Amino acid sequence: MSKRDYYEILEVPKSASAEEIKKAYRKQAIKYHPDKNPGDKASEENFKEAAEAYEVLSDADKRKRYDQFGHAGLGNQGFSGFSGGMSMDDIFRHFGDIFGGGGFGDPFSSVFGGGGRGRRTVNQGSNLRVKVKLTYEEIASGIEKKIKVNKYISCTTCKGSGAKGGSSYHTCSTCHGSGHVTKVTSTFLGQMQTTTTCPNCGGEGQIITDKCPDCAGNGIVKGEEIISIRIPAGVSEGMQLSMGGKGNAAARGGVPGDLIVQIEEIQHDVFERDGNNLLYEHFINFVDAALGTNAEVPTLEGNVKIKIEPGTQSGKILRLKGKGIPSVNSWDARGDLLITIQVWTPKSLTKEERTILEKLAKSPNFKPNPSQKDRSFFSRMKNYFE
Image 1 (cartoon, rainbow, N blue to C red):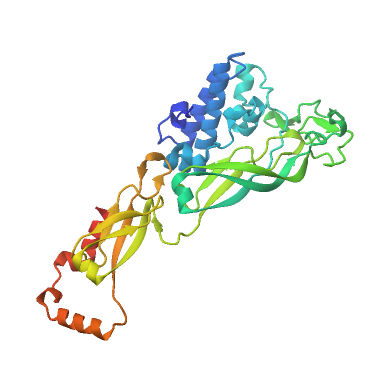
Image 2 (image 1 turned 90 degrees about the vertical axis):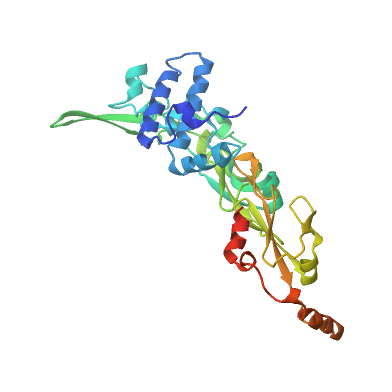
């Protein structure tokens, strides 16, 4: 099932400012908040969908990639994959500026009675970056790559909890499990309330009393994982795809980071890339240029035959439509293969060849008298863009 347009989800135009996007998300979050719609699965999915849209459109870099390439520019796995399993607490933690911090001005405290969700600090795993090298053939068709990534993974001994036996922890006595402490101070303006992360448990709400010996209570260990990456057709050098949740595992069962995949192109033996077009030089001798000939040229899908008309001049560009690279945002749009004909001149001649050419040179047809179009660089470039 294809994803809906993020602007459509938040009901904003593509020209919307960051503040307009934030306000629109706040409106959608209030409308579909699970506390306001208890047990309503459709509202819960809309709530997560709005969170995913806001995550992309509130980030300048992600929004730029989305505007340029659509969902394909974000990678097949999405970014943080809200609809793929992130809990409500994860969403509240990611967007604390939207949902408030539990102190003054918390919009959800007043609307839903306390805003107690997501107060504990949830550990966040760090992102990982990998480079994937692709041939032009792989770029043209799209490919699934399996790579081995060295990373932090969840400790199998304690199942990521960090506690020996999986249950050796108790509720923090300082914050009573909330993960934060509230302090009220008197100022000349009146009483001021501040909420900070609990210094005793680091915001987790619980303290391990007997740490796992294999991970020393962190819940993560160094390891490796084989990750399958689906790369869409049409990607280009420097493009980045993001796989939500495939980065480093987080301490004690937190949210894993993302895997950022950077595309590198492997230089082709015969082609050069110009956007979605491929450039190729085909050399012929001047006899074939004068008489015309049929030739075989390579494409990414195999060799094809082309016809070279009599009197073809060096530098003439032939276009094979649809034989280039597809657009990353559409399977219908595909670049062309542009073949530049180069007339090759021999550097050494036999005595017999020289005699034949000297006779031909005296013929009026061999006297250079090209038309303006033939000798004009700009005319050849016009042919390139037509």
